[in-house]
Amino acid sequence: MTRARLNIFIEPEHAKRLDQIATHKGVSKSAVIAAALASFLSPDGEDQREAAIAKRLDQLSRQFDRLERDQNVLIETVALYVRYFLTVSIPVPEGQQEAARAQGRARYVQFIEQLARQIQRGRSLVREVHEDIGPAAADPTQADAQSGTDADAMEVPREPA
Image 1 (cartoon, rainbow, N blue to C red):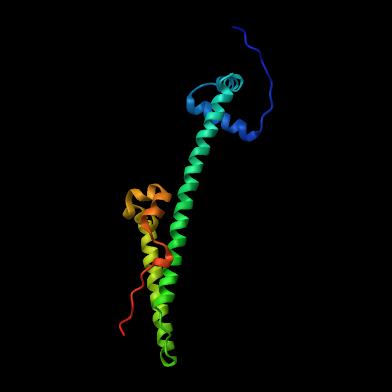
Image 2 (tube, rainbow, N blue to C red):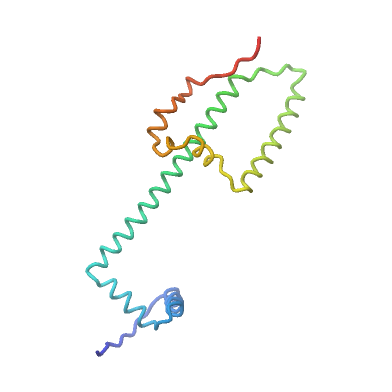
């Protein structure tokens, strides 16, 4: 079989990558280019590229869905906490405000330290929440319907009178 000789110009980055691939696979640069050209010119080549793109888009879509789900959990968690805190917090008398601020600073430092430990261990509170609620988390519409955790229906512990 006779082969046609071509002189082509490619970007330096492409030339470097071509060298790496040829070395890694143990074949000549011509063989790598011939395989790439055959794939590109193949009638099925476009279908294969389209399938690969569709597969990658599906993966990205699932990742986006997980991010959106986790973000919703975080938003709801913060909103629920703020509502709870504002509902149960009582005003601090004037004479005790400095002590309350000092206690608040100490609690904040403790919170940050605990958060740092959680992150360093690689544990995710969002993941723990999803594990705790089980299969209902798989379908967000089912989770909302089953949980019945409307913020208006939240029970707030009452201070003893």
